[in-house]
Length: 168
Image (cartoon, rainbow, N blue to C red; front, side):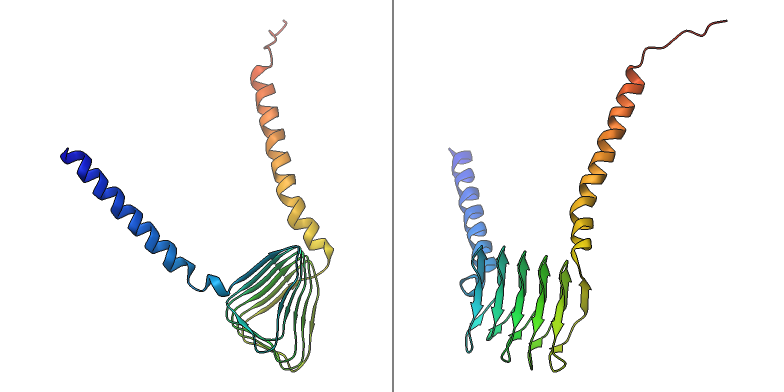
């Protein structure tokens, strides 16, 4: 009976701990925007935590407190829009209009960047433009995997090859 009561207390303590961690980790999740295949627009006067988009684009005219990330889409920041974190796009472009502010880094993989001279970037600007980088990024793991499989096949064939006696 003592063991069962102790186990029940331990289970209750673990559940309360996990619930506390989940609540703390959620933070401003209510203000975060995540979309798949549907564009995100942050309008003037609107503020969100973070914006993440898969297969769509993000347009910022208001304020994003955190990061803005687009996979397979573009990021457009205009009309004095502000990004408090980083702006990153994979297989898309970034356009920074007049008097916009990005407090973090701006990174473009497989796309282009258009930047107005009045746009302010506090962090680094990194661009790996053009589709060539996307081919390298996507194909490199497949090539490495193929070479690894070829090595394994070669080793197995070498080990299983019947030995031939030497003729004199």
